[in-house]
Image 1 (tube, rainbow, N blue to C red):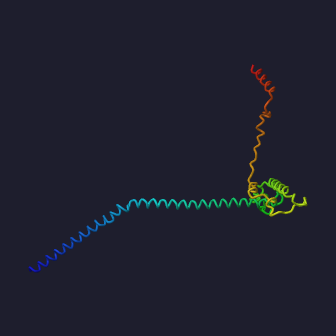
Image 2 (cartoon, rainbow, N blue to C red):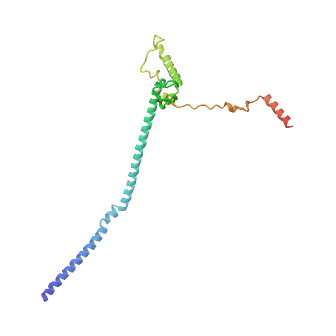
Length: 220
């Protein structure tokens, strides 16, 4: 009986020691986890500064990405605008070559809408160009070119073809595009110079003197 009591007491003491050791180990683990890297965080690496830096870098990256997307969209819009402008100039070049296809009131053209006497959309474009001004400029350009180079040839009546004709056969694309823009009509203000059928032109000195004397007589 005494021997079994001693064995029990030893087992109890061992279990208590193991329990206390586990408890101390858990407490030490928590303390070490709390203070682990404290010297590095204090002297070498600051976690909160790192988080702040990481936030700034993230915001800057998002801003740069948004600017890159905006720049790509703006570049695409600029490219489309440049292509559209170039297409308009080439369209102006083609339109001046097709002016003879514009319909008349009696006879329809190849671009006319069937069953109507109205101008189609493309015919309105043909009708909007200033063809008379175009021919004037083209003739002036041709005459200047002939006057500049005609002295080099013996036959003064027959002017040879030189190059592709870009210097005298047709205007440049910007010039043609300029002639497709509508001209603002000058407002006629001649009616404002008259009032009730009488001219408002300035009177001479003698006429103003007579009018003044007449006004004085009426007032008296």
